[in-house]
Structure formats: C-alpha cells, structure tokens
Length: 102
Image (tube, rainbow, N blue to C red; front, side, top):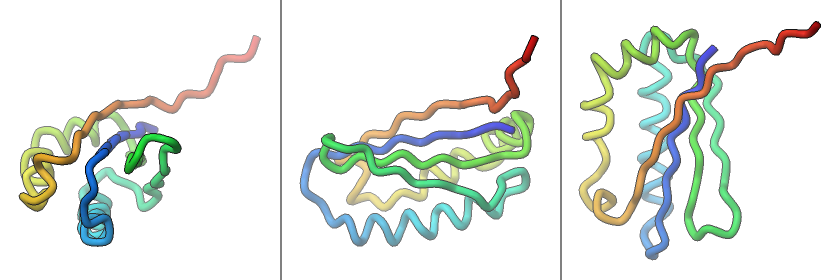
C-alpha cells in the first residue's frame, strides 16, 4: 500500500466553504483514477490557521507513478484561480509496510 499525502496551508482569510466544496469534488475525481482506493482521509492540523492533510490510499507505488505520469498535471491545474495565490501545497509519499518481527 502507498499513501499519497497532500498538505494544504493558508493563514489568510478565504472562503473555506467554497474551497471545501471544490476539495470534495476533487477527492471524488482522484478516487476514480485507476489505483486509488475509496478511503481518503482528511485531517485538520491544529494551531496552524487553516491547515489540512489529505491522505489518499493507493494499491501500489506503481499506481501513484501512473497518476504522476497521466493525471497529476491536470488534477493540480484544476484548482480554482482564487485559491492559487493563497494556498501552499506540500506532498509526501508514504509506504505502508509490515515491520519484520524477529
């Protein structure tokens, strides 16, 4: 399993309801891409203004690479223009592995 984590930060006031509506639709579109699983989680990061972490679960790292090659540019470009200058995005890739027990 692979987790693709997208962190979003904003310290300026903005229309959070409008952004959350866009984000819900965006998550649905992401989960429709081959390799993504319908188990996305959203976490609020405390004490950092508006800051959330979205974690997408994928079948494999190869599925994430497919997303990067075929869909990432379009999906990232889908952000409404009013949010492009006020939101900061960072991303991480996490691999879910079972620890080896001796």
